[in-house]
Structures are given as C-alpha cells and as structure tokens.
Image 1 (cartoon, rainbow, N blue to C red):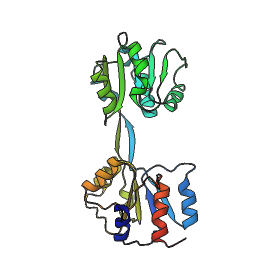
Image 2 (tube, rainbow, N blue to C red):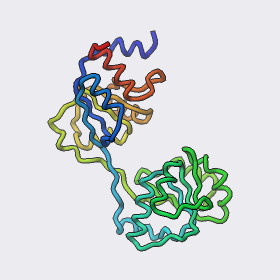
Image 3 (cartoon, rainbow, N blue to C red):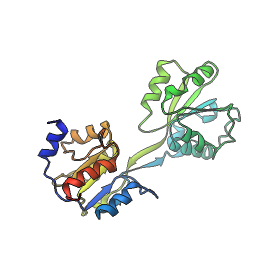
Image 4 (cartoon, rainbow, N blue to C red):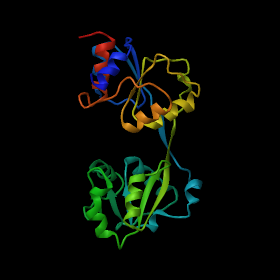
Length: 260
C-alpha cells in the first residue's frame, strides 16, 4: 500500500459543507463549479494583502530611482509601487531606462506606465536566469534597481550577487497579514492555503487557534512545511494525479461526502 493510500485509510472522512479559501474572490474559477456540483458554501477571504511603504520609510534609504539605469521587475505589485513612489517623490525616469521583466505578463502590465519599446524592455519566461543573455549584455554599463516587498526576492538577489552585478534591492511595498477578527466566531470544514504567509496570518489573528475537526488543504512545499511546523494535520493537497487544488478537494469530497 502506498503512503498516500495509507494516509487515506487512516483519514476519518467527515462531510464537508463549508470551505474558506485564503485568497481574493476571482471573477471566474473552477471552485464555482465545485460548489455547485457538491452543494458547498465556498467563501473567499485574503489572509494577506499588500501595503505601500510611506514616503518617510522610503526616503530613509537615501536613494532615488532615477539614479539607476535599469530596473528589474518580479511582479505587477513591484511595478505599481515603483511608479507610485516615483510619483510620490517627484522622480521622473529617463526614457532610456531599461526594464527587465521576469514574465511576459509583467512586461505587458508595464505598458500601463511607459511607452513600450522592445529596445528597452526585456522579457523572461519565469526565472531570473531566463534573462541571462540580456542582463549580461548590459551588465557592465547599467546600474540595476530591484524593487521588492518586505519579503525580499531571494533568488533574484542571489543571482545578481553571485554574478557580480552592480545592483541595489529596495523595499517599496509590504506584504502583511489582513485583519480577520470578524471571523473569530465563524468555523469552516476546510481551510485552503496557498502560502506560508497565510498560515502566519492565521496565527497572528488567532494565536490560540486549534485545528480540531477543521481540514487543511495546502498547495506547495513551503506551505506544507509551515503547516507541519505548527503541528497541524494536512488533509488535502495536490498530487501528480490531482495536480490542481480543486481536483485534490474533489478527490477528498468523493470520500467525505459519498457522492459518485
């Protein structure tokens, strides 16, 4: 018997009627079909949110974005807060500034803020290494700025440091726990988490939280680790056979709610 089969055999499957997903509600989602099919109440609530740094906080760094000739963007949030700070401190970026975007979606979003020219926007696929050719081409002439959150951008910083780029990473926004106090008297059969920050937020809001009969659905190895470090049980997680969270939840529902 596989480890997965053993875990299923040990699981005491109780019916699921309510699910809380620790993310903002999307306009379209396979969760909506899941709720309809299984007659579930699915609520959405972001456990974390992004806040800008204040002008005072940013000025403590004693730098200006226009001192840099190349900017590396790792997310849409980084773009939003970079240009917000530029506006806040009355800093105008040169038209010759080069922008390095980790993905096409990030590069497309950048068009909201600049006149898009291929000669100054470089696009990766997913990782900083995807931009290696473009970065190396401009390594000697450019000074790079990496807008980050309070969580930093570890992989990008490691890459730039190990390859001896002239760069500075700077916090321009913060990812913080949301206020969940209105949920203090509300219980759900299943809580769904996609980030270890969601687990941190849960305990920041409810330090005395006890799992009891609440089932935990987790996505990703870092989220799994955060749950296990709290001594909590994981009941639902994607596998190679059920790679998405909705598929993993439905697999559990087949056993817990006894519907073919």
